[in-house]
Image (cartoon, rainbow, N blue to C red; front, side, top):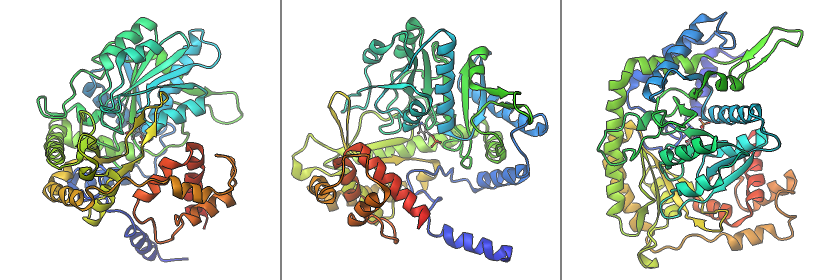
Amino acid sequence: MIEPAEVVARLEALRALDAPTHGGRLLSYVYDSGRPELDDVAAAAVRAMQPVNGLDPTTFRSVGVIERELVDFARGVFHADDEVVGTATSGGTESCLLAVKTARDAWRARGGRGMPRLVAPTTVHAAFRKAAALFDLELDLVPVDPATGRPDAADIAGRLAPDVALVVMSAPSYPYATLDPIPEVATAAIEAGVDLHVDACIGGFALAFWPEHAAGAPASPWDFAVPGVTSLSADLHKYGYAPKGVSVLLQRGRDRQRHQWFATSAWPGYPVVNPTLLGSRSAGPLAAAWAIASVLGVAGFRELTASMAASTEAIVDAVHAIDGLTVVGRPTGPMVALAADASVPAERRVDPHLWADEMRVHGFVVQLQPASVQPDRSMLPSTAHLTITPVTEQVVDDLVVAAAAAADAVRGMPHLDGTALAAGLLGGVAPAGTIDSATAVAILGAAGLLDPAGLGPLAPVLSLVEALPPALVERLLIELLAAGLER
Ligand SMILES: *Cc1c(COP(=O)(O)O)cnc(C)c1O
C-alpha cells in the first residue's frame, strides 16, 4: 500500500514532465480559456459525476438531462431546426466516426450495395481516414489548391454519384484553417442525393461566436443554416474549454440519425442500447462542458472569441511583416498555418520547421506539419501550425517578438532534406510497411529517436517523415509510441 498523498505527489511530479497546459505557450492540444473559474466549475462538475455511468440515462437520469440541455445549446448555436437531433460523444474522432457510420448505413438503407465512397478534400481530418478504414468506405480525396488550402467546389461536385455515401467539408480544416465551400457543395449534394457532413470539430464553437466583420470571420454560412448539411460535429473539449472527452454530433432527420444507434436484446445480458461507440461512459467531461456552457452563455463565448479574433489578427499581421514567412491562404477562425514565402529569393526565406524549433528556444511550442503529395502529384508545403486560444491574449506581445526573432535566426537556412538520412537508415530494409517491430526499433534507434530524454529539435524528424514512404513512416510512428509504453 502507498499513502494516497504519496500517489498524488508522484502524479504531480509526472505532470511536471508535460508541456505547460496553461498560460498560452503551448499552441496546440490545449484550449485554455484563461479563466481559472471555468476550470474550477469544470472540476466540480467532474467530481459530482464521478461515480455515474452514462451508459444508462434511465438509471442515471441526471445524464439524460444534461446531455439534452447541452445538445440543445449546440442546436441553437448551429442554427438547427426541429429536424436536427444530436448526442454527446467522447470527442471529435468519435463524432466523425459516427457521422460516417450513420451515412454508410443510411446509404445502405436507400439500397446502396458494395463499397461506398467518402468524398473529401485532402485536408479533411485524419479521423475520416480512420472512419473509412474502420467502416469500409473508399476514401476519394480531392486535391486542394496548394497556395490557399481550398478545394474547388466544382471538383468536389464532380465526384458526387450514387455510390457516394458521404461528402465531408471542414469548418475550418485543421491543417490550414480553410473554410471549405460549404454552400456550393451542399447544393450539389442535394442534387446528387448525397449526405453532407460539416466537420466543425475544432472551429464550430469559435466560428459561431466570431465578431462579424473581424479578420478570420467565416465568409459564407457553414452550419445547419445551409440546406443540404445533414450532420455536423463540434468538440466541446476544444473551443468549449471542457476537459478532454466531450463533443457533440448533430444530425438532420430523426430516422436518419437512428442509423447512428446500436441496440441488441439478443444476448443473455441486459438489453444494450448505445447512441455512440462506447458502452459504459464517463459523464464527467459532459457535465463539465454543460457547466462551462451554462456559466458562459452566448455572451461569454462571444467575449472569449473576440479575444481570440484580436490575437489571431495580431499574429497574422506580425507574420505578414516578417520577411520570408507567410500565412497559408485565408485562415478562418483561431488557427494559422505558416509556410516559407516562395515569392522571395531563397536566401530570404524562413523555413517553417526550423522556425518552429527556434520558437521553442523562445518558450513557445508550435506544431510542425509535413509537406505531402496530393493524389494529382501536387505538393502541399511544409508548415508550422498555431492554435490560438483566449489565453493567447496574455502572451501575444511576447509571441510576436519571438516570431520575428526566430525568423531572423533561421532566415536563409534551407529546409532540411531527409532523403540522405532516410537512405542511410534504410540500407537493406524491406519494403515499406512490412518490417517487424525489432527492425523498426533499430531504425528509430539509428535515427536517434529513442532517446529517453525526449525528442530534440523536430525539423530533422519531420524531414524524415517527408522523405520516407508514408506506410513506413506510419509503421515507425506506431513503433515509436508503442516503445514508449513498453520499455
Ligand atoms: C480535433 C479534430 C478532430 C478530431 O477530434 P479529437 O477530439 O482529437 O478526436 C476532427 N476534426 C477536426 C477538424 C479537428 O480539428
